[in-house]
Amino acid sequence: MKAMVLCAGLGTRLRPLTERWPKPALPLLGQPLLRYHLAVLKAAGVTAVGINTHHLPDTMASVARAECARAGLPLHVVHEPVIQGTGGGIRGLRDFLAGDDFLVFNGDILYPVDLRPVVAMHRASGALATMVLQPMPVGETYAAVELDAAGHVRRIAGHGPGGEGLSPWHFTGVHVMSPRVFDFMSPEGEEDINRGVYVRAMAAGQTVRGVRVDGYWSDLGTPSRYLATVQDVLAGRVRLEWLGADSPLAGTSRDVGGTWAQPSARADGTVRGPAYLGQGASVAAGAAVGPGVSLEAGARVEAGARLERTTVFEDTVVSPQEALSEVLAWGAHRIAAPLNGR
Image 1 (cartoon, rainbow, N blue to C red):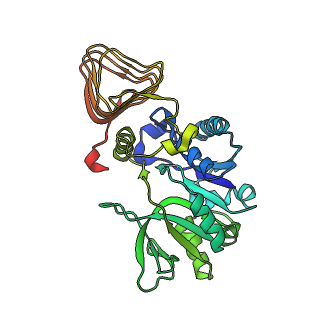
Image 2 (image 1 turned 45 degrees about the horizontal axis):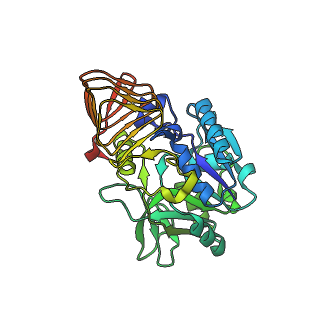
Image 3 (image 1 turned 90 degrees about the vertical axis):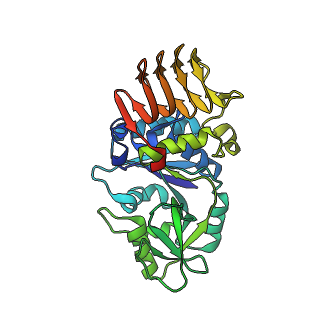
């Protein structure tokens, strides 16, 4: 089975971080976010992966090549000089994907769940596509996917044939598709898979199903959501151990205080878990770090600094006497990431 990870987005809400990294390439506790996606896809039986690129295409392709080589998954890359949207992005990989049912995975989420039952249900159903859903997150305003009593999608973000007695659900950004989906795509131009292609297919009598899969889910599209996801992983609220050797944190030691540390990290100051210290990260004597702090590779916290609920990105120096809380620190940037604004 093949899969596509959508990697072309601009990441405007995460600027200036996305001036350096496309969202799927963002470091998350020492690993590119894409590594988490590949672990989930590999566990689902995926044997080859395709991506689309647009924003920072060389960076995205380089990270994807390294991560797919690490995972033992062949990689197919298609560049979009003009961004094509989710539907157009999938259409761009038609030659790669069209031989069998395939998975599509949003590149900016964290959703470590077992997708094998979804794939099996999709294959058995004969549906054009199966959307992976969850109950609507409390306090969020995501557009709803509405199902009828048989589990058929009848409306997406207000578009579609509708019906009586529909129930609203949250779309996770993961689908399983039949190659027949390409028959309902426009031949060219930007289009949305959910609001365009699926609605067109439903109008033609095709079945799009919705399947609930419970498990941790997060959209990392804003500074607050990124930092909240880090907090959740550090606190043990995200199940990764079931991925075994493919878990992005496999091989990283964790002490009794809840601090993950790479072997080359050094902590002469105070570290209060849960925390993460990446390759070559250092905490100077007289500094205090934690709880809820992650230091990416090469990050340095100098004497007198105080950090809590903060991520420090690669090779960033936190100066003496800096006090950071609910912040993403990268180079000279200090990006507010209030956790009550997730």
